[in-house]
Image (cartoon, rainbow, N blue to C red; front, side, top):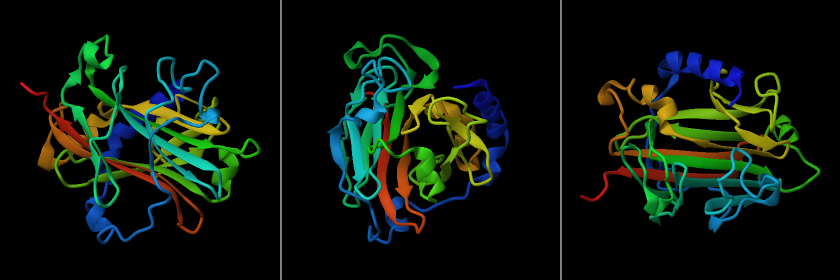
Length: 266
């Protein structure tokens, strides 16, 4: 991540807790799931070629394969959304199931990143959770760019859950095209509606924005909830959403996940 984004992240973490409004769980929010969900979801899918670097991996780093994603494609805009969970620096985590409302259930290990040869993790890092989520938003038409997509008043957003309990406490981040803050790749950063940045791109092009994120980056925000003071990668339940919408609010693609952070078997 570039230095400008690192500086903005530091400022953001100091002030964002006051900007987060509580939200209902997905099913309650959606009136028993009777909402527009976007296209059908493909599983264990491969990111489109425009989202793959020349070395065969994703743009945000060598060793991150473009496979194993939950994927939705909107045919009206040639936009593809991809979401996956991984053992940090290791293998892809396959879904454990899907709810009746279409949320994908993942079960990931609690605790920090540890050496785990069975899942492809060869190094430990006490300052990172054992799992990451990877995302990509890719345009399949070579004539279009993400700048054009956003300037047409379409939107891309990521919602992350800051309540480790069963409730949902969302922070919504919107993709913003800003070459000044992200001068390389896709030129996209992810901002709150107040214009504060939590994270940006570690890779991409004019047609693809993608990154890998770890809840260590916002663990201080999780700890800001007086009901759950402090978070140290213990068992929890988090919700994630990667969504694209048109200027009139029509869901172009909408991938939702429930992440169950569970203690390893004794």
